[in-house]
Length: 529
DNA sequence: TCTTTCACTTA
DNA sequence: TTAAGTGAAAG
Image (cartoon, rainbow, N blue to C red; front, side, top):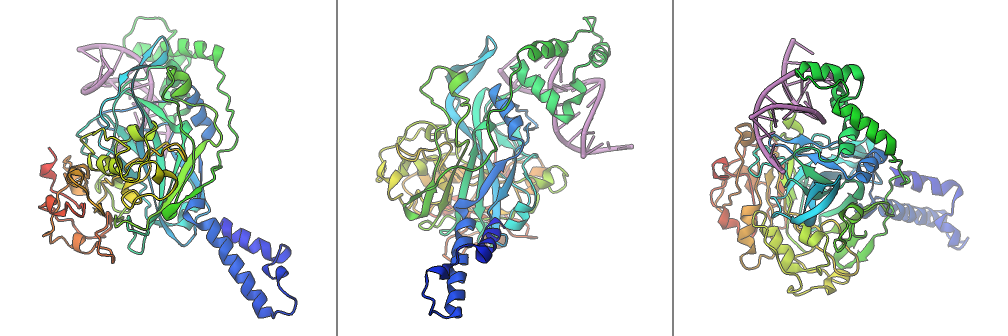
């Protein structure tokens, strides 16, 4: 849209491409030159790496961020507040995109709240099985995404490691960073094939610490003040008195909330410092069509968690990186419009994948490492600490030629990433819970990592979700599932994620048979536990 | 710390 | 009217 506007705007009064041509050239040549330029302009501004995403209610996010955002996680799943909403521009209006979110560990620490501040309490628990939340409108055209805010408000967080609903699983008292991924869908409304392009946007102000109950009163107050659903807790003498009476309390009408409010009002200085949340990064062209930019979100070396683990003002505030996949066969086909919980009004719009655990690669200065990527990708549940530097490419791949293995959808670089001094690489293994078939493919499986990935790539069907049953990936080369057979892309590689509208999924019986391809499809729910 | 229950709210 | 989302508080 923007590109079109630009393209259209240049011609009348702007510099025409024909301006540099000889006057003797024909009008036809002039037209052709203009056409080429216009195409170039359109291509440039609509290419995946130029897609712009602006965080909605950034000032609100910033208020929370400055107080160190906390997000409640519950067994049943809890929404995030503030909600993750973005305004997307510079998409090709006619191209189909898939928008999804994953939430990766921001570091390898466990936290505690002492003396009214967050402190490091030890080493992080092993990362939970990464899951992705695919926006329910996916796949949709750029015009659709740009038409209005893209809201991920129905995304839910849980601390239930065996969560059957497809919610994003987190560890309590750990710090996380949500990431937005914009994936260009292929002709099959899928992604993950060798030509799949995608970009990742990270808004550092959306980082948070997961908690089972709020720790910081300032956060509690911000939630109450800003979340409509918490209106019942907003401070007023009447309200607090009402609450105390209803609960049979004998304590003073000056409630905890009131005290909090009064305390907070005395030292609240949450005015935003950031300017408009815009994409200000400058993609660097990496080999094999990889693009990335950004800065580390935190300095993990610091001993001051308050000042460093929730980095404040930073410009650009938005980290993003973009990739185009050419050398791998990983392929995810999307069926995001099918509900995960088809009978649930809420669940009907929820779509989850899994993404890989990540902190070890997301924050620290591990060099870009093919082996590590594949291994982590393959160890969704194993939380394997993979050594970097042993890969064939190592750091050179960071700035030069990424390996084939790395250059694939499933190994999308994690948050945060560094452009020069080693690129921590985040697996981006697909897990999701829509009724679509997920078929992650490991193009170049190596050693045992592939078999681990089979365990990783849990998939949830709407049917299983309704039963409260998670589904464990099974694979089968002998699968007769129509979804499976129909989801192979033309390159011969099964897609990672395939939409098969109206097709009930058939459990695949022999997951191991897909070991070399890493293909995953809907599984038999009975195997989850 | 975590889970469950509660009263209240929004949509 | 009802389903679902809130933080508080008890356990």
